[in-house]
Amino acid sequence: MAIFMHASLPGVTTAQYDALNAELQALPGDTYAGCLTHVCVPSASGLEVFDLWESQQAMDDFFARMMPVAERQNMTPSGEPPTVSEVHHHWMAGG
Image (cartoon, rainbow, N blue to C red):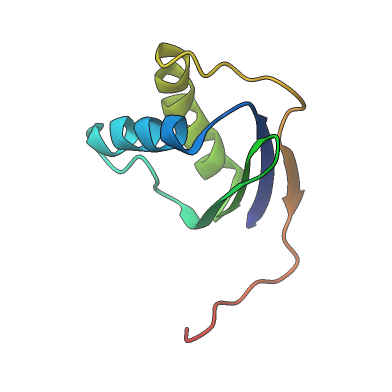
């Protein structure tokens, strides 16, 4: 079942986000396996991240790979944990 995730990242800048993504993309294997859609939006307090994952397991596998990289870059979680919801239905334009 697809999973929708929303994370608020107070204090995180787009430069930090870009550095994190650059390191994640350099990892061996498919770091983003199972991610159907990803959106990152700057906000007044930091960043807002919205993901659609094919499954809870795919999201958990990504977080297991991402968190050590984020910690090395001193991007420790602050604020509320991400909200996760089961998806009833999704579609993509043109698909």
